[in-house]
Length: 433
Ligand SMILES: C[S@@+](CC[C@H](N)C(=O)[O-])C[C@H]1O[C@@H](n2cnc3c(N)ncnc32)[C@H](O)[C@@H]1O
Image (cartoon, rainbow, N blue to C red; front, top):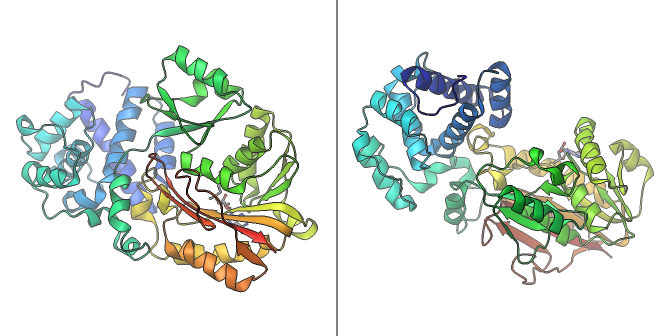
């Protein structure tokens, strides 16, 4: 695969489609995350050039995003020679067509194997209804319905009037959002200008900048290396405004993970105060350590979870970015739709209750507790809030302004893709009496 030219003949197309098939069936069989599996594959195939990687990665994301419609065509197991499998080639070429992937030569080979007449292939239309017609006509994939694009169990997890409005954004490729920090927005945007990177600033969330350039590799950019910006979706950035941490407060980020929100809160506190960051997985906090050092944030203190639970009290604010089903980021990780267990929301809800019960004890009187998920499930959001208020009557919901709409929230907020093309998130802000 050392040839970086996408004008591929049969042999190169075969190596692409075999790679796609191998990764696809491994993810489905082993229920492993797609992004990790792709990385593993390329580690084992160092001859793959950047264009090969791009084609294979993009094709896999298309295949998972549209799996609900093309699955009827795909063989049950991984074909040994994927180009000899008419079914596999039909499913894959349909998924690529649905997203208008720009791999014309590869498509030609796939379509030939699938028996699809490429002379009829025009751009896939934007409208879902029109896509359904095209699939039937061109690929003989019939009886598609928008609801088939998510697993059956998920439909019971969301409000009935929400489901249709949720699925359509799931099918669009998400944009990259960055968050500038250390008051360095002008410097960052100047560098983007020099590098020819197209961007637009968010009108309300002042540190949020949307990148419109297709290939954006932060690691190559000087201002990223200096910690002047982080990749962070707009929905996550809104959570900083829900917390509203001020400069001399002490906050506990209970589920800090790789630290996206710890950095957000630390930046909001302008390097003052203190953010105590913990996670059940101590290892993941090393990533936060690196990011905090890069940004030179001295106000993040990484701690052992048990130590904080045993010895610290009276936080001004406690932030619970709870482990959840991640259904709100399914468009970023479309594989999760098909590999998540049916009971994931129920199981997550149990963990969420346990974490909140422990975390709320550490809030000082008149202090704040913020609960957040990147889930769309009622069980993990509204039901958790109701259960918490019943169990801990010393807390009440506190009103705040929705960062994207400017409207009063009454204490809970849902961000759902619109109007700014971001992920979905849920947050509740409680005040201790
Ligand atoms: C949604 S992720 C956090 C993402 C992170 N806040 C960020 O912005 O990058 C949830 C995290 O909760 C952690 N977790 C799971 N159970 C936990 C528990 N009982 N106590 C603390 N952290 C837990 C997981 O290890 C995971 O890193």
